Length: 150
Image (tube, rainbow, N blue to C red; front, top):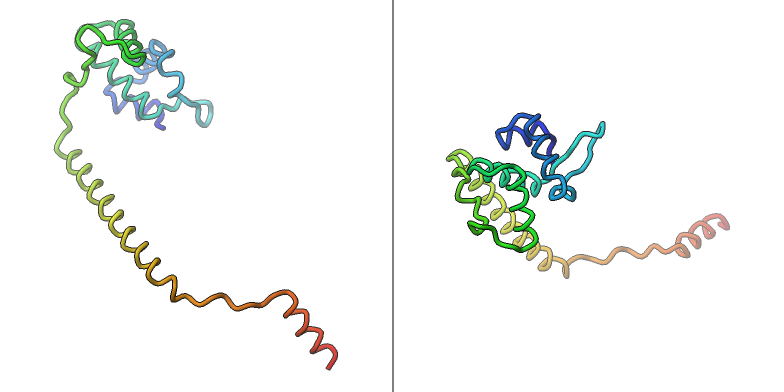
């Protein structure tokens, strides 16, 4: 979850604009908003995507209330006039971000392969492990009693 400042930077809005968008789409965002320290608003990834979709609709000429209505319809399963495709208006991801995402995906793939290999090694070596020595409570009690009686 991110704060208002980070969300505003992500969406390219001022904090005041973001607060207005949030208040306009409050019924849609209610389950995606939380409160943090000092009662500040926190937004999850779904809230950011909803606000980004509102902004895409707004840039195509719709008002925020019309955009909110379309989002509400798309969430409930109804199709809008243009099929609800705000992705067409979304700008393409920049090259540095593509490289970061590719590096992240490669790291995850490598870690998964390493995890599979290490689990195989554990399964292979587990039968060779020696059982823990038996030192029950009675054995310790007998030793302390035998040394006290001698």
